[in-house]
Length: 333
Image (cartoon, rainbow, N blue to C red; front, side):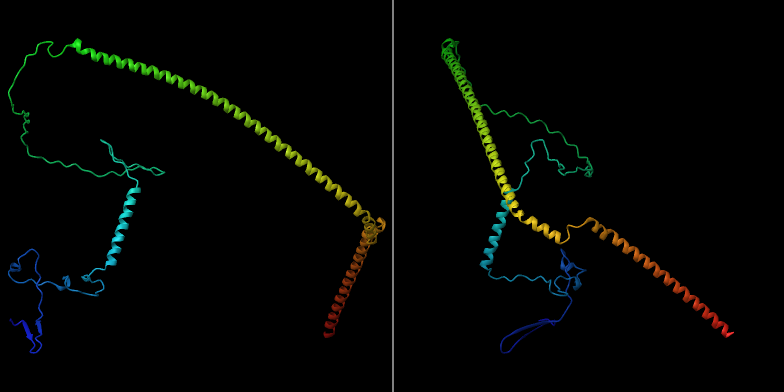
């Protein structure tokens, strides 16, 4: 053991303890030989920049997760969440509007879809760069591939008419062509006749349908006229009944009023006469016209006399006060 390390073992329980003197940790440079660092001498680093040293509060300290048995419920929840996310992504991809790809020799161009168009004046900066390459010898043309010949050549002489007799062999072909042509012509004629028959039936059906439509319109118009006339007659009858009812009510009200007013008018006239509603015009004119004017003139005359007397009393009092003051001044002298 060196002097820097000390080990102790207990005599009884056999425990082991280790202790060493504190020393500065050496900073090993990356991708270098530790023996060649600083001419064979160790390079010491600053612990303020060492990531293995914890400084300040330890709230943001990275704590390694504890390796333990995972919870099956948590694993199941994570799997369900992943499945839901995958399902949402698939649904989004399914209902998302996809832009079709470009056709051959074409490309997509950005087009403005806003309500107000604006001029796009931004241009992408580009630059051209060239470089000189070494000259190479042109590649020679590739020779045409000719496969090697195999087998032996042989020839056979065939005289004219030995393999094919045109007059004899062309008869079946002509029969087929003529037969097919005639059959096709007959089919076309039958098809034209069938089309003509269908057109005739269609024209007859259209005429019948137009006649039925005209008849149906006539019946509908007649029904409409009958319904309008019926409604008008019902409205007229209702008006007649309403007028008859109003006339009967007016007659009843007039008769009741006459019977009610037969005894009411004498009593009303008597009450009005007692309360003074029926009066003598001359008497009423004197009471409402002459007497108020007379009272107003008398009141005005009395008021003028009162004012004159008040002014006279004021003058007499002022003269008396003036003479009294003059007398007092004369007596003092």
